[in-house]
Length: 116
Length: 118
Image (cartoon, rainbow over all chains, first blue to last red; front, top):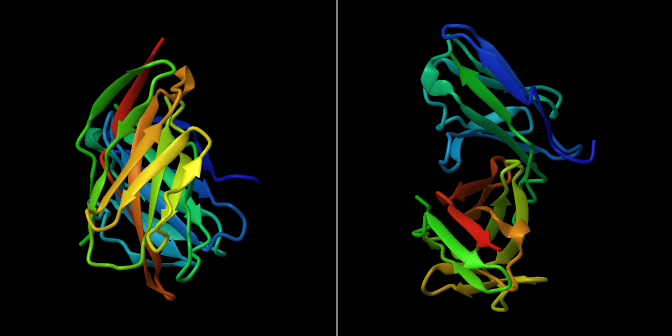
């Protein structure tokens, strides 16, 4: 597609359930980023992929959070045993990851997760 | 570590007036890139403007321009002739290149909520 897409756009789940969030980056973009944005807050970095590997997982808040990327394309962010504090918008972005040159992130519309 | 600071959580401006959003950053890098993103209520993040640190000339995109002061590590966004559609959260971001194997790293400020008043 022309832009970054994310699914679902909204997800309501019960506390303790597992959820999977999906991100489809722009075709050809080797870098993929996940962020969390709580209501009225800024962007909290979660994890970053270069190709299929994740050189920086430093932002994952706990071992309940994991992410993978396959085929240098789709990525899924999985949250196990969800807690109410996980409620937020999860944003995905992709970029060309131009070495030593200008690089720009392009964002998806986000997935709004609500944990009841 | 890189940090990006936006000291104005909220701002408002009268329609057709000019407003400036401030951003400062801290880095020891000499080559980097700076961005302003806009996030309207639809929550879609949109790139507004981009500046390469090695360029002295300030970037301009239609009604949007930046005042880039490298020595002061300041990167403010000026919006001229403000329109109702400019109402949004604005995020300042910093990018540095790490290594070819690990790519680029981005750092975001906490955002400024701008309201354009009719």
